[in-house]
Image (cartoon, rainbow, N blue to C red):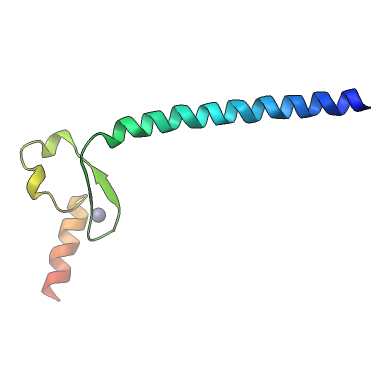
Length: 78
Ligand SMILES: [Zn+2]
């Protein structure tokens, strides 16, 4: 009985460890992405990351998408 429970605990513990490991790997990937410059879109309040298409005008990029930039113009009008 004791052994059975012990094995169960052990198995759970290993899967938990693996989960932590996967989380670490994910965090590493995210950290790499975070190296790119990012901004927060004032329309949808979501952060967006530098893209190749913005290479030349990143400084003037304000919105995450065309949809948001349209919405911003719409909001200004009203
Ligand atoms: Zn947006």
